[in-house]
Image 1 (cartoon, rainbow, N blue to C red):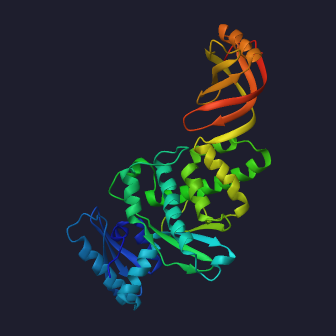
Image 2 (spheres, rainbow, N blue to C red):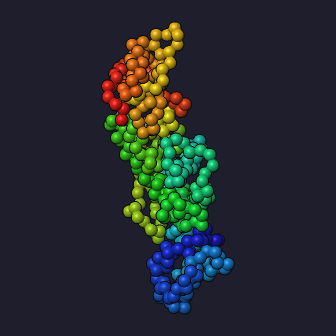
Image 3 (cartoon, rainbow, N blue to C red):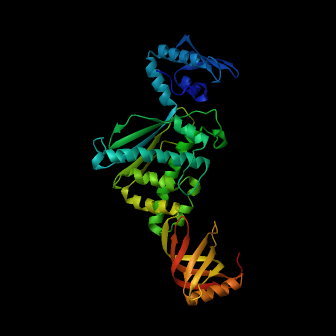
Length: 373
């Protein structure tokens, strides 16, 4: 049996582990190793390498495991298991419903659970590198790929149905420090819980106000279509299960974000998360939408009284909206277009798709006679 995360041995967190176990730092060899002696018995000594690139690194790791095993009167397997767990964050995903109460889950739902768990972690990892509103696709950045290669599936648990993900905490030799000041794995874990918490809070606000812009404000926090899709899927094919997500953080790794967190998402919230997913995927409809902007294009067929205009909306992304207008409103749009210092305000049904944004069933049209700012 081999220690999965050998690089943990080189870290300050392993030094903390030794101190907790009663070891005392005897001497330091800069850039090479630390020498430790067991407080209860000086006959036991550990040479802790601080650089994993040393030629005999794996041999030194084995020596450390032997010393810990003998000094604590534990088997090597027990020591390895303890070290693997002490340097990991455990992400626990629990789904709760009567149909999984005995720790079993229908086969189709089980496949969906594993698939959506991967999607959940993909959202967290890629949003650390590049937050976006839509679904993540294409090749993963190298640092994300390394993170996924380090993940392990822990043993499932009885208690409804519990799936455990094991995320080793250590600095990779790659470029992850470009994205965060702490190990990338820990950053992903923190981002996961933070983004779910933000989504959970936003759902509550959206339920009260019905304003989709609430979801726009949390894109920077790692909330996106992929995250929403994952949570929806975790609730089951029938969207009937409570989704509970908890992180058990490594006791040794630095913890700047307080105690372990647990977030629960009830089935009642799933329908709102589905609306959020459509919003992030640019596939949604808003009734009684107020569109304010400038007319930049006019288009009317020869034999038609009304026509279609294009309006640049005054928003962060200055999106272009095509609007179908009757004769009266189209003539008003001509006036607004002729004077570039005038803008318009319309009320209608906004239809957003990935390819086009339209405003239909216009019920109100006003020209604002002031400069565009």
